[in-house]
Image 1 (cartoon, helix red, strand yellow):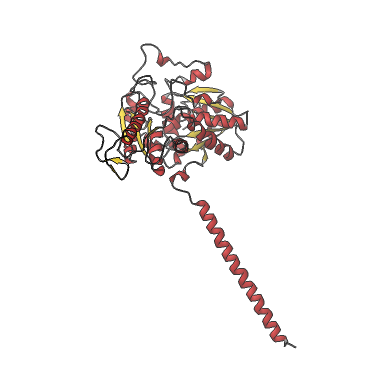
Image 2 (image 1 turned 135 degrees about the vertical axis):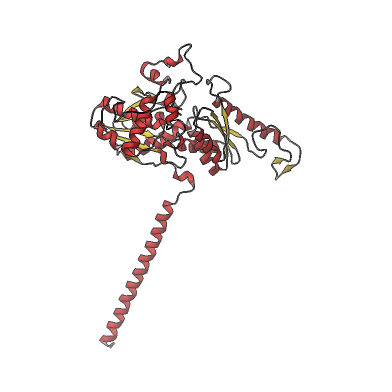
Amino acid sequence: MVPAAKTAAAAMAAVSAIVMLSHLIMISFRYRSSRNIANKKLGRGIVAAIGNTPLIRINSLSDATGCEILGKAEFLNPGGSVKDRVAVKIIEEAIKSGALCPGGIVTEGSAGSTAISLATVAPAYGCRCHVVIPDDAAIEKSQILEALGATVERVRPVAITHKDHFVNIARQRAVEANELVSKNNNDSRPKANGCCPIIEPQGSDFPACSKGGFFADQFENLANFRAHYEGTGPEIWEQVGGKLDAFVAAAGTGGTVAGVSRFLKEKKSSVKCFLVDPPGSGLFNKVTRGVMYTKEEAEGRRLKNPFDTITEGVGINRLTENFKLAALDGAFRCSDMEAVEMSRFLLKKDGLFVGSSSALNCVGAVKLAQQMGPGHTIVTILCDSGMRHLSKFYNPQYLSQYGLSPSASGLEFPGLDAGS
């Protein structure tokens, strides 16, 4: 018979072994779990950092109006604006369709933000960027583009019907890049590395080894709409938990306001969606009266630009394919003065340093809050920061030339006195 002491010792050893094994299993499980969590947090390059931006309460506007005014902080995207979403969607759809391949050149006509986003993400797909930009756009936008490695072509502002409009030139540059590829493919001369003629073509803006051009066409390419219908809209809906009364935003290409409004209306038909429009743009009259017209279009009053405003990237005098998909209940006008005053108010009261279109959107949010009354939740878009608007929108000398020096002490500029 085994002595009791030996039995007890064996039992203790077995218990110790079980405890040790359990401990090792737990450590192994925790290690694997931590690895899985870490792997889930790892994004695949810069593209993974785009989207899922915070929805923040704009305290000053919310407190003043009695509504919850929330801003989608798109300026926190890697490229600094809401256009990052569009750039990724356009490039990915083009690659999937075969219209663009690694080594290709993405061309675009842009007042700045879309071009910057394309130049930011294009290298992640092995592509380059050629941008045509109006020469009255803030100079820092061109500087950013060049720093990102894009080829920048600055041209004089003309009407979209003119062949030298920046969008039309960008379209032509894509054609030229494709013609170069076709010429190289038919070239019988020896090729370096299997792809390039030894002699570079003369007078070309593109390297001989380029794999063709693709015109992004942000105004008419419905990938723009889909970026917001599939991304921005669902994010907003999830972030508010379905508790949303209204959405308001300005339109340039129309992709944001169309994609978001269409998605939100499908989720909840009672959500009110509004446009806010700068001076000289015809969209306000199109939404409210069914006619694309603005007084700046009157004979003898047209200026060198298609519309007359210091805000950049918003306002237009034609219907784009993207904007046609918008589901809107109404529209507001916003003056340049209101946009300037709003930008300074947000900086002073909330520490929000926003660009011109973001300020415009916030004016629209306040006007919508005044119309709807207290107790509603309103979402707008904070498109980009003020960092790319220093030479114009945040330049006191520039603003004074147009009588736009800010002087308001509160929110009296949109008709709401919020005090100082």
